[in-house]
Every structure is written in C-alpha cells, then in structure tokens.
Amino acid sequence: MRTAAETEVRRPSAVRALTILLATTAAATVAVELLNWWYAPEQGFGLAVRTGWAMLRSFGFLLLIAHVRRGRTVARPFGLILAVTTIFAVGRLIVPRQGVPPLPGLLGFAVLSALCATVVWLLYRSSALAGHLVRHRPRLVIDRAGISWRETPPRRPQANTWLLTSRVAAFTYSPLMLVPALVAGGSILDGRLSAVPAVLFWFGAGIAASYAVLFCTAFLMRDKDWARGLLVAVTVAVLAVDLPLCWWLLGVDGLVRDGGPLLAAAALALYGLRRAGRASDAARPDRQP
Image (cartoon, rainbow, N blue to C red; front, side, top):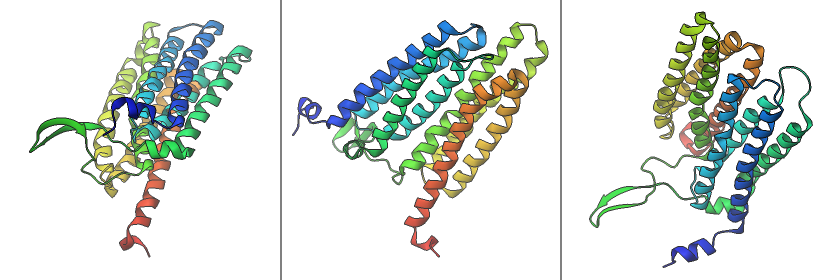
C-alpha cells in the first residue's frame, strides 16, 4: 500500500507545473486589479464592487489547486469557467469609460490572458493530467465495516466533461446577476429612488436563478433529456432579465461590462449541452437512425 508521502512524490510533473501556474495566475489576478484600480480615473462604488468580485477569483484559483492536487474530475470544467470569466471580469475593468486604457493595465491583462489560456490548455490537452483527474469527492459511507468517510463512485451514471462544464457554467448565473444588481444599488444611494423596485427584482431574480439551476442540474447529471430543455429555458430567462436591466440601470457601459461575462457563461453552458447531447446520442444505439 502506498503511503501519503509516496503518493505525493509520484504525482505527475504536469500536476506540479499546473499548481505553480495556478498560483501565479491567482497572484496575477490580484496584481492586475490593483494596477487597474490605481490607474482608474473614477474610483466609485461600481468600480469597487466589480474589482472586489474580480479579485475574489484569486481564491477560485486556489480552490482549483486543491481540486487538481486531489485529482478531482471537476477540476477541468471548473478551470475552464474560471479562466473564461476571469478574462471577462478583468477585461471589462481595463477599458475606461473614455479614452485609451493605460499601457500597464493592457500589459497586465495580456499576461493574465496568456496564463488563463495556458491553464485551459493544460487541463484539456495534457494526457498526464487526464490520467490524474479521475477521482470523485469523498462522502459518508455506511456499510458492514461501519461508518467511514471515503471516496466512492457516484450512484448516478458517469457524466461526461461537457455536462459538468454546463453545470459549472450555469452555477455562475446567480453571482453574475447579483454583482451588477449590487452596482445598480449604488444609484439608489445617489438619489435615484425610482430604481428601487427594479433593483429589488434584480436581486430576487438572481437568487431565484440559483435555485432553478440547482434543481435542473441535479437531474441534468442523471442524463434526463427534459433537464437539458429546462436549463436552456432558465438560461434564456436569465438573459432576458439581466441584459435589459443592465442596459436600463447601468447604461451601455454596464451592458458590456456586466452583460458580457453572463453571455459568455451562457454560451459555454449551451455549447456544453449541445456537445453532451451529441455524445449521449452516439452512445445510445436506440437513438441512432
């Protein structure tokens, strides 16, 4: 039996390289955001909220490190969504409302984009990582030997990577709605009291989206066809609520800065559903013509 120390030593070199890369990306995310805050001509409430949300992604990269080191299957879709939304979240803050972005900010964003692209490439193209990211989350198990906390395969059928990608992408809907809603809440502090009902509705829709996604993805992972259609409907509803409110309460600038990341997450979720559907049809002889 291998000891914990032996398991640590025998990890693929790609795991150690990716761990270093993820730690560097987390640090770069913080550095670029601080740099952008320093050069920003307007350091208002909206920029503070968006900057704080973007910097929270550095903790996401640290969480991804834990998943990679433990060989979790969720590391791939989580890394893809985290990298894509980080690029959007940071990129929307680099461009000012007027004028040309500062050169240090552009250089920092270019470096961060290259790091995120390398993370995605390693996760999906490295054969060593593909053989390492095969473990499932531990859970409480009760059997004849007693009660133990250990890794066990899920009872549901094994979901493919694209279903996991759609699930992770859909879980970002709620925070991507709540962040601009919080930014719009700043307009209330500026005396725009007519926006109160819309902002409250926006918050409620963001919270409701999280429960709707949780419900349909629970059945999506069991490969239920109706759950795919439900997730598509939830995605359309989320876009139908968020994008008009971004345009109305935050203007065209807010539509680009806050609607863009949500559109990217929605596109990934729908694309993942499409790819998963093709793979499912190919694996079921009764569905083939």
